[in-house]
Length: 362
Image (cartoon, one colour):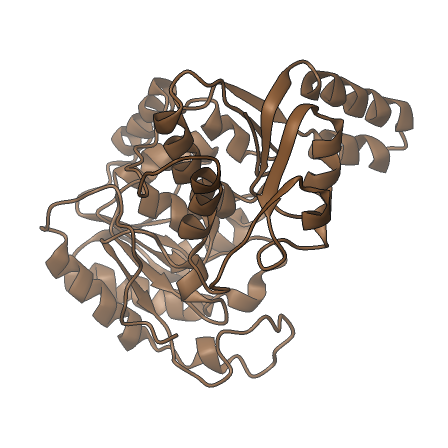
């Protein structure tokens, strides 16, 4: 089987339980995964995936920007050669966009199976031999992805998923903690979001106020997470909130998984890092604005979502100037959720549940 889910971090993570279900149902089947970006490094360490094929988008774009068209073509040719090395019985397109559909045409093998019109985008469903239809547009993506393994014969519920962090990533994070002398308990705060998704980011000044309350009233340490292009803002936030807050070390995705596993709580918006924290088993307080919690909420029983129930929410208006759904969330709202989660931390942990919080109105 070839699984196609190219990006992003959160969407790849939410497809992993479905792929784990395929492995459990068909233990002798060889499963390859076509992906792009840094999340591919995490996939290489998961035992239910046999082969990871990486689409070299970044390398091709860098070459094109430098005018090195031949190098970009060589990268593409090398990738297509790898993609065609194996012949597959099934090509399972979890991504459902025109790029994933076109790439599936280059694959040697059998049936192309993907989402039908309800979940597919850019008419990618027209490229599938078999279409997996849905009945609920607002079905959580973990549950939505499970429709594909069930279509091909899996009779299982969402399986438990324990992500593997390589030993070198764990050692790297252990060295960071030893050198930083960070006292427990430790909460991770991620005030950022990916480029192009600032529309769903809570105000960074309010994150600063929240961090101060956590330090002063909970006597907890806070690690401020940051990614590419965010270090300067993270450092400025750290200087604003003062002692007791620490800047995270640079991390790739496996190292970030190892870091999140050491956290007593994670607080942040609707991002891939939030999903990584949820799948790591870390208690999560998620701040949601315009995005749909029923589709994208943290898939974990040890999670809570802070949001405002407005007539216009959820929505996909990235240019909204009112931002009532986010600006209406106060520091007190989020801190109250932190206190409530703190009371729940003593509960037995499990990988995640097959449902999201039912208190969220549809």
